[in-house]
Amino acid sequence: MTTLTEGPLPAAGPDGVNPSRARPAVRALYARPALTAGDLSAPLLALPDGHPGVGSLPGAVALSDVRRTATRWNELGIRGIKAFALGHDRDSAGSAAVSAGNLMVLAVSAAKAAAPDLAVTTEVCGCSWTSGGECVLRTSAGDIDLDATYRLMGAMAVQHAEAGADVVSPTAMLDGSVRAVRAALDGAGLRDVGVNPNLAIHTTLYGPFKALMATDPVVGHRRGLQLEPGRAERDTVVQARRWIAEGADSLTLQPVMTAVDVLVRLRADHEAPLVAYSTSGEWPALRELGPEGMTEYIAMLRRAGADHVLTFAAEQVAVYLEQTRG
Ligand SMILES: NCc1[nH]cc(CCC(=O)O)c1CC(=O)O
Ligand SMILES: [Zn+2]
Image (cartoon, rainbow, N blue to C red; front, side, top):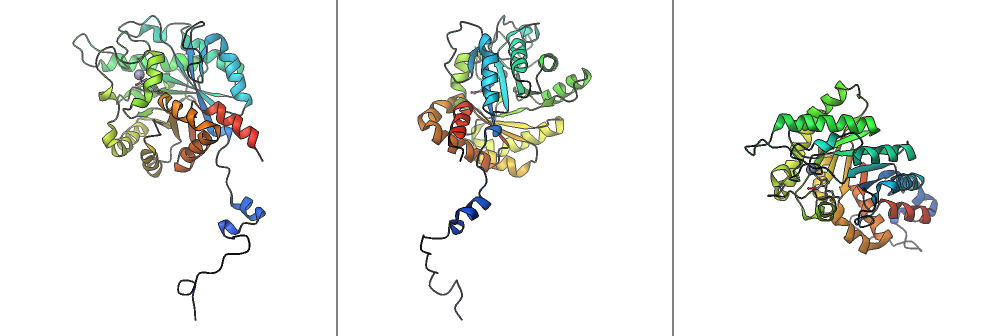
């Protein structure tokens, strides 16, 4: 008796049958939509009106354009934005981060007013607001001032949530910061606001963001507060466990173009919603690929395990998906 493994391979059918037996109805039966606009969020980099950086990245918009931008994204089916604001009135304590009516608060309220259904996540970090461009606050001796940093992050989270943010995203990778932010939100009665900390790997792929938002530290670098790329596939999993233990509801991995292996490891280790952030330095490469190539890349991130993708390509991909919907 011949079995399939012993004998000659069965001949291909007349139309080269196999990729799932080629009948259109059957292909459609098993196909999964690789990507929809609802899988996407867009970064919103809020700048003061008249700032020369407006338009230098998709989503780098003047405050007076936030409403229009949020409306357009919402109409395209994009589900969320992550809001960052260009810092102003910087000082050593990062005080303007919690000043009434700062650029972040104005941007969040404008986005929410224009598109209440768009989920707004905000960056909670000191680097836009400290004179040294550091994510954390320091004592006069130069050590990280943990209590002051936790207090600042907690106060920022509450202020963003009161302006309408649905989720806040502590970015400094400082142990204890997620717990501090969760406690501050709960203390203010904001229990339904989520905490989505970053898992940030040290990379050159933050370059355009740092240049535009002036978040590069004036002295030194950010290495101690970001994961070392050479160990990222292990350290990210360890850090993710800590964030979840501290009360994180979901996680963001950044960047992803050079960390897809990490994304796969994280997915295998955690059930928490996982956002893949294709950061600013990925954008020039994606722009080269064009809308179809960008869409393939973003679809790959979903297959690799991301529940949601935050990307500067969100608008172009959403437009492409709308145009090619079959
Ligand atoms: N903590 C600040 C921050 N928040 C987001 C990014 C990068 C985002 C991007 O490149 O799109 C950075 C990088 C940094 O300043 O180190
Ligand atoms: Zn920062």
